[in-house]
Image (cartoon, rainbow, N blue to C red; front, side):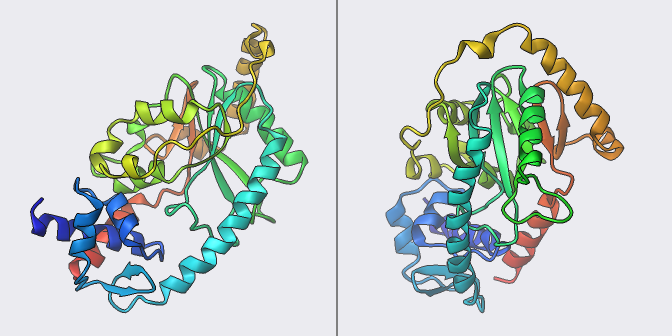
Length: 295
């Protein structure tokens, strides 16, 4: 590994996470670096971290030492949110067509703001995204756990669902250099689901190994989570009718802007529902480049 390439990779990953006020440990820098290398190579490079700064075991851009406290505060908030999400997800985790429910949109697995809602990524059985979305939305709405104009903090947002036949998420990237989506996928925090669903998701997205080659080694698939028992009810044929009905109702209720939108932030089909109306990835990419230019 050429020292120049590795030094640039280190600066790049620190600049990217700086956008989210997230200083990194040397282990995390290795984990998300775009260059394949050993952890000890990263540690050796960071013995003299200039132009980066170091304090309390964290590395950050010059003059940004205050984000250490920000990360620590958000870590405490996120731990509470994750525990809360686990309890509240019991409301919908029993649905027999759900294969995985994961916490999403939290670059840095514990970087959630106190006032934020809890974004979820859900994997369903094939041809069941509309049905799961419909039933889960009703349950969350009736129990006051769905985001609204009046309340967003700690609510559960079902904004991204994919079925078992659409686990390759590469079509969701802005382009081949969309580093944010790579970090998004690596940052998923599985909470409920079948024990092998997460493994299948990673296997279907082998491109992630090229973007952040050290991550998979550093973050092995966690051991068994909450395993859903097999239920014959999930395969009954009449659910196909309810899937179609759920789709029709959703399409009626969806805003015209969402239905007309097409791209990587809004995807609406029978195998994937990705409804992120606010997509800031282009801003994140530009902001990271600007930060790098200052080093």
